[in-house]
Length: 240
Ligand SMILES: Nc1ncnc2c1ncn2[C@@H]1O[C@H](COP(=O)(O)OP(=O)(O)OP(=O)(O)O)[C@@H](O)[C@H]1O
Ligand SMILES: [Mg+2]
Figure 1: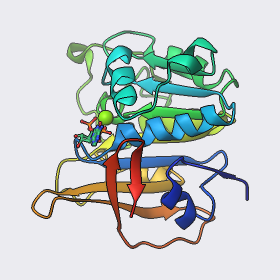
Figure 2: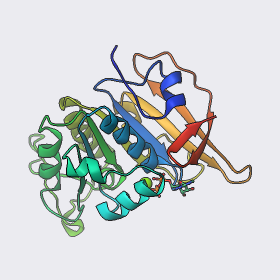
Figure 3: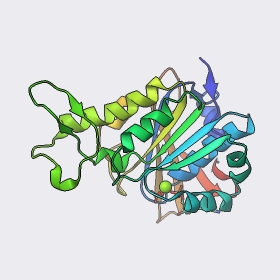
């Protein structure tokens, strides 16, 4: 099994070299747990090897992200200028967000793809164009247009669509999911963890002033389930 280094040394070690090539890994955790920093490190590791990377963001404008990455010592500007990395902000309120995202993902250009985070998408319902057959219109609708009874099975299809697109790309992907502090779910939607090949959780313990990273699932990989103590410092996340 070919492995793709995450750029987090200790993590690559416990994963037997890194993430399985072409897999999709969900990185979930509460606010401030290091999800975006994980994504920066993953793409930066690719840049070091001349691999192409795509950072899809739904939460934050690109400029802010680049500043955040530079602050921890990961400067993407040279890679962006060399067209090795592309940061793309997708506005959830715009129509054709799926089309833009799908075209970009399926362009076949990228070795590594990051989607930070899937939560806004997973909370955006889709509607059935025709309930007679299960044709799904995945174009954006405004909240007022949401049909009644948008429920879990429909949301599952929705997430499946996103993850299937990533799967169809020839890339190794990392998708983040925001979870409330103390939640027992592995993702906000409670579904993505089943669809992803791997799940890594990041957690915070403010009382003890400690952070942890756990590999909850990784297909084709023998790994420990034990939470690993981490620090976030210059350069990003490090395992103890
Ligand atoms: N230069 C730094 N040195 C040490 N720690 C830092 C540094 N920069 C950020 N951090 C820590 O990392 C946290 C932010 O991490 P990150 O943005 O990756 O979290 P996140 O899980 O993506 O959060 P959100 O859900 O809000 O997007 C900060 O709250 C801070 O604790
Ligand atoms: Mg973030």
